[in-house]
Length: 403
Image 1 (cartoon, one colour):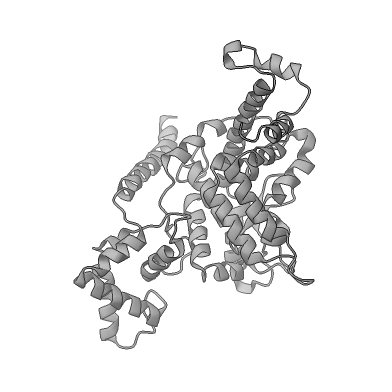
Image 2 (spheres, rainbow, N blue to C red):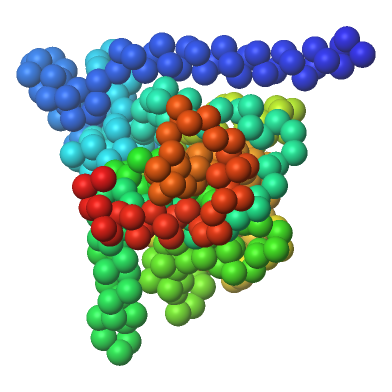
């Protein structure tokens, strides 16, 4: 019995120890833009950096197979080894930063020479900060999921309209994602994707996650789950006239710095671990949730499938893959059969549900002219009103816009 327990616990201790080391290492990192600027100011580093970029441009692959001559290949390897001692080697980027694309270009310029073209690549992004980690802890998911009594997806949309930032960025993506460009094009997908990325990068998680990961009551599963599926306007951001092959979609994603980075971040932070109580290798739901939302607004945009269970997938399939069928199935199963992701989503749904319920009570207290000092039980407040808080709050906000 003791040995069985150790078999489960010891790997988890290794995971936690590695996570702590990663956090400590991250505190000394520069973002890749600043690291590049610092390197270019130092002659030795600058020379090696320029050599490395020429090697990448000429070689494309990590073994520099296209670079002519053994001497040139040795020079390339020497430049890479030298840069491992510079701030560039350990640099990372922040999601949504002002120069994100430039930062990612620098990162992949260095790391594609080190990582090759494997299925799992290192994430170029810094881990999420403690504030987001505190919002979604592991505790809520250990045990049975919370039973939802209200349509939290509808409530989350209403709560978003009451928050200026959420309302602004939601309107900013609804417009391009629903405006037909021509008879052949239902929308401008590029603008829609960019606006969706800004929504999930800029809007506080308690609002964006409330819409994306909301839970549905048993009595209203169909309509509620469809509302959740429609959050990202899938007719524009998700669907295509024909389903592409998943491996071709992955290859297309890797030609774009942002898509490649968001996909690598998702693979790195949502890796499943069956022996872990959380179902996640990294024991961090916040990182997985952020990585999943980061894919939205790229060619690899995932969405909820119309199925009885909560399941997500990019808009692609594994038809016409020939000898690569196993590789394609492995890719799609990381979305559809991932033990980490649905548990992280359920944890977010539980937490968002509690936040909405607390907001619900505050709304009703305000409408009834009550405060916490009146010490009126919540059950009494709910029984004395016969309206949904969110709708009442919208009316109240309309008449008192500065309240």
